[in-house]
Image: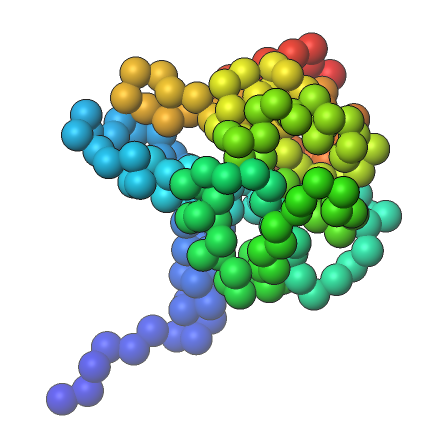
Amino acid sequence: MAGISCPPGLMILHRRIFVLVLPLLACLLALVSLPATAQPEEADKLKAVFVYNFAQYVKWPESMPDTPEFQLCLTGTSRVIEALQRLQGETLNQRQIRVRSLHLGDDPSGCRLLFIGESELPRLEFLLETIDALPVLTVSDLPGFAASGGMIGFFWEGSKIRFEINHQAANAAGLALSSRLLKLARLVGEQP
């Protein structure tokens, strides 16, 4: 008995819709409540999914070198960073993800996204000044991160993981954030 087949053009359309809708669906699902008994590791993995999806809704300046890899840079320590390290070799916007650890004195150029771990709180101001003129999306789960000059910061609202965006900081770095992403966020700082 022959199976039901779908015309190739329809299959391609279904794939395109799936690829376009899946990241947005993941962000929306992430906004739902986590059970009160959720393990911290689950929340950290969810934040890593958010970070991956954030990058899909950002446009970097044309002046940035066109390379076959997406440098996801990490500094400090946190369980979110451990989850983000698992993205090594995955594909994002047709680029292979290269996870790179940054240490004091390392050159951050080439990074497209920098996740700042909780251990970096004492150096936060210095880190943000170091990359101030670079087109690097900064993300962290440090309290008040976006209000302190970072671009995207996680926060808890009851039992929900939410995020806030400092649109002015992103614009100053030459990054264009999608209106879809902005609609899901709480905006902080002066708005452009």
